[in-house]
Every structure is written in C-alpha cells, then in structure tokens.
Image 1 (cartoon, one colour):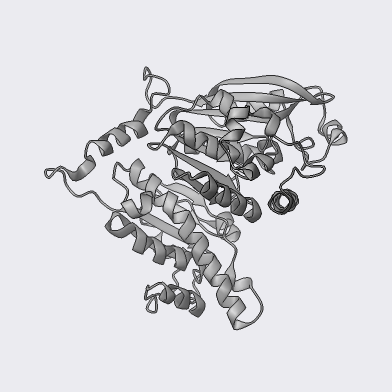
Image 2 (cartoon, helix red, strand yellow):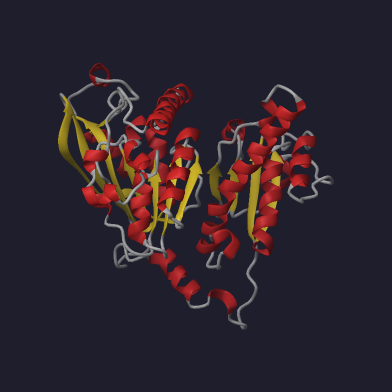
Length: 424
C-alpha cells in the first residue's frame, strides 16, 4: 500500500511544482494555497514562486519558536517557503533542512534558494518515513499539512523522535479528524492528495506521537476545513537526556557546538579520535552502494572509515567505475562484497540505499544509526550506452548531494569540526 500512495502523492505535487514554474500561479484543485497563512512581511521576503508553491494548511513557524543557531528540519518542504523562513530565524550559525520526495519540488526549492540568497539551507531527497539524517541531530522538526499524506504515519512519528535531539521540539500544522469520524467517513469528505482522506483523528495523532516516545503533546484546532475535519497546530517534545536538565536549551548537541566554536578537538593534548564507521548496503553491491562508499571515502577523509556490501555479492558495475573515474576516483580495483563479511563488525551508521536492502538488512550490534536513502537504481535504465551512463551520473550526483549534509551532521554529532568545503 505504501508505494501506490507515494506514487499518487508524488505525481500530484510534481504537477503542482511544474504549474508554479511554468505559470507562476496556484494549482487548480490543489489542497489549498498557503499564502494566506503568512504575513505580508514574510511573503515580501521570499521569491514569488516559493509562496505560490505553498500548499499548506497553516504556518508552523508561528508555533515552532525557532532560535538563533538551531537546526530545523521541514518534512515535505515543497517549494521551500518554510525552509527559507526558518533559515532567516536560525541565522548564519543555524541550518535549515528541507526533505521532499518529489524531484520537481526539489528543483523549484533549489531555484528559490538561489534567488533568496540563502546559504544556510540544505534540501534532501527522501521520504518522511525514512529521514536521511542521523539520530539526535535536529533541534526542531516542522511540517505544513504533509504528515496526513504519509503512507506509514507510525514510521513518520518514529523517525521524528529518532532525529530530534534530547529536548528537541515538534511544531507542525496538519489536518486532523474528529474522533467520531471513521476512516470511510474521512474519505467521503475529500481525497488523499487533498489532505483529507489520510488524516488521523485527534486521538490517533496523540497516541502515535506518544507511542514514538514524544511528550508534552498538544493538538489545537484552528479552523474547520470540512465537516468534522480541522486544520490544527500540533506540538510535542522529546524527553531530555537526563532528568532535571533545562528543557530545550540545546542539550548534548549544542554543548558540542560550543566545543567546536571553542576550538573543538584541536587541543594538542587530545588523542586523535577513532574514525566514524559507515556501511552502505544495497542488494548486489554493484552500483549505488559502491558509489556511496567511493564518494564518502573521498569527502569524509580521515574522519570516516567506509565500507559497502550487498545482501548478495555480484560484481561492480563498469559504468559505476567509469562515472567515478570522470571525477578523479580510481575504483577499478573495487570488488562486490556480501554483507555477511561485516556482521561481526561495529558501525556507527548503516545506510541502506535501495528498498530491497532496507527490507532485509540485518540488525548490527552496538550503537548503530540505521538510515535509508531511497536511490533510483541506474542499472535498471534501458536505452543507449549514453543514456545508461547518464543514469549513473545522476545517481552519483544524488549520492553526492545527500553526503554533504550527512557528513556535516555526523561530524558535529561526534564533536568534530566539519571541513569547510562540506559545511558550506
């Protein structure tokens, strides 16, 4: 059921992005145009296309209480309106991440970012059921009428709790149904892509957040969208790491930021720390996981020790080797490896890069962060040799785009200073 819903939502919002790009106007029959939810001052500070692409039901920034230096993640970031506004609020010492699964929306958001001149912004491709960021790395999660679109809302709540640092906050706008409405009655009132049919009830929403480990949950309706269905503001918080700690003061991650600002581990009497160990897992360890291993080995330097493996070993695709050679990486001696080679080893991060590997990836012992990056398989592309090579180039660029925020966040979470070329 998950894949059909993702495809339905992706197709709808891809059309929305193209309509804004081509006509600079709200999309006919879209869920809603989000511009009325923002102040005139906020809209005036943004590219017009960012505002026109807003299809939300509220303004999550009104409740997120963003602060200077914080790291904020927008789930389902669309054309980037909430990411760009968040970036202004957290300032140059903070960072705003946007996560979206639609290529057309990501392209529109990147264009809007350039036009806005924002430099503390990162857009990530992925699904909100599998957020491609490390655990305990985000101060605030926001979202604007997107969680109701998710195919697996339990996974979304679990992922929110995972990426929030201790004391981190959730502030979202979403559509919520009266508790008395059945799922069938919700579907009668509107479509899934219209943010109605997939909405949770008040009771279901609160239970989902609480089961994921969040607390201080409040759901406040703001206005009725249709009979028995309301826009609402949802707040929650992740428990502090230790009892008695000051709530939302930055906790462990902000302490690390202060250490970094003070010089981090550059003091001469500190030992050189062990590298951060990362394992990329794919089905055949032929293309995507090989590209990821090669790129992180280059970009991460001595701070990372990188491996890749497949649920079964085959061979390294010659086109992967060729694409890496084009950017100066000699991968000709690499071999395909089975995941069984690494079951007795400890990894700080295990990152699966295809759905089949995600379903069968073993549980690794020790303190491992498990992430999933849903990458298109370039080996599936049919066509001419040049078309196949172009597919591998796109995958290489996709991996490189995901690695930049991953390296920065992983280094900061480990108390190390990101390299300037990656921190950007």
